[in-house]
Image 1 (tube, one colour):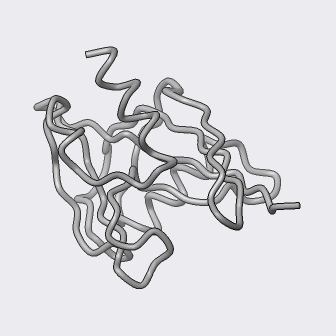
Image 2 (image 1 turned 90 degrees about the horizontal axis):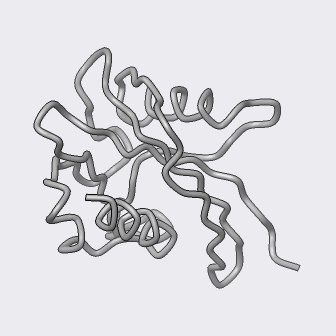
Length: 131
């Protein structure tokens, strides 16, 4: 049986309604794919708490977490990922790519032009359908 992992992703908006997209480093699993930054939910954490912690660790900034956007189960070759994505806004600091190859702000309408990690695709589709 495949291992199931619960993870969270932040759809971080700026004041121009652009979304922060993170390019996974080539040596990471799903390397060179774009994703919404985030990470694993630790034992005993609420998803929103883990999202604040992960963004602080990965990007060095503080976010405020808003509404949930999607709850996705995606089956990769050797793992099942349960990804919860949330709207978020930066309330402290500037995002830095500590773990990712690149960060960039992308207008909502242009999200589909990026090569997304498979588990993130349903969130992109949901965002585009709501716009």
